[in-house]
Image 1 (tube, one colour):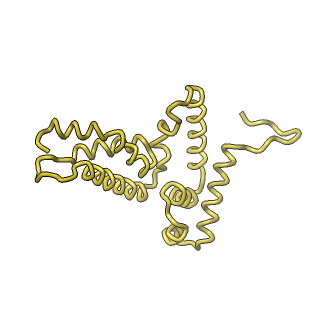
Image 2 (cartoon, one colour):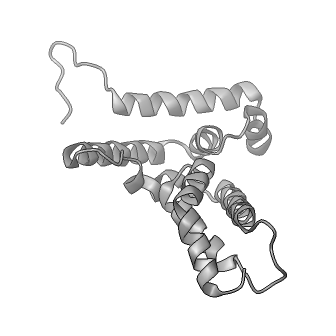
Image 3 (cartoon, one colour):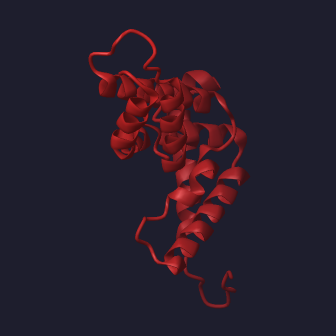
Length: 174
């Protein structure tokens, strides 16, 4: 790599693929965009000549994604909130996007209403991919209790998305 122009050209030629790669790792397109930009800033052609600069860029993106996921697993904030704007399909209508955002807001609110250990267990298992054994060890409970916590949270979220039909004499929820 000889110049900054070469660096920019290489980055621009592979940017979309790098974002797709990062999005698959961190499950959030906006975070993936940030990671790829950070990778570009860390990518330095000034050092010794690189034999495979594209693979080097992918390695930087992967390492940044792993660091981001590690950091997110230690934070207690719900990672769901960061990516609300990017979850809608790219070709969705404005109405569908609005509906999706309302559902995400309802799910985020329902998740916040859960007891903290149940919320942490759900986030760790469903969003971070942690095993039930890891959750049980971290929370100081049995694996069966960790499973029950995740199931409780999932049931609450499913209830929020698809509330039961009101029976005779019951009011409907807005």
